[in-house]
Length: 173
Image 1 (cartoon, one colour):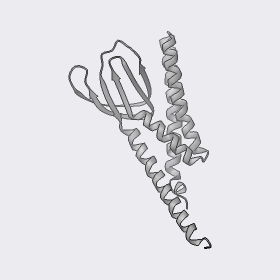
Image 2: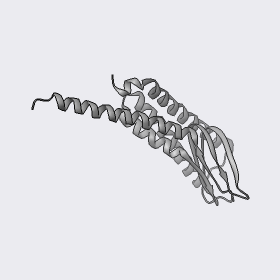
Image 3: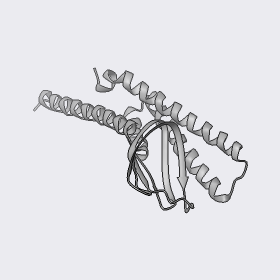
Image 4: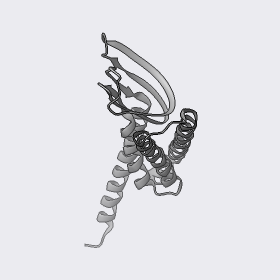
């Protein structure tokens, strides 16, 4: 039985998680766009990047569902890595979450304060905004998912190594 077969439940969960997170993110972006009613070139660019990131999350999930497991896991690892760090520094910042986040970090704006927050599918980009906020957060959910993906990839690599060794031992000399 292949490692991927053993991890089938986890892979399906990851696929649906990324697809639902991406769809929610796109939906929320369009909803906020309609509410704001005012778009500039910069905000359109930011929306395009957000749409691309959330679409990428959907694509990652689709690859796993289609059975392209190795590729899907590699893409999913990158997708989760993009969600690990959230920051804002003197008017520049980024927060991307396709799914669920539990952010743990620090706010350095006036005095150093701990931050803990949770959200569902979010995207925020600040480019030369007037904000003076300085904060850094780590998404614990994305870290956990990356750890899970790495464990599956490691087991698959070990199984391939064992299978290669076994085939080498049974090959005619």
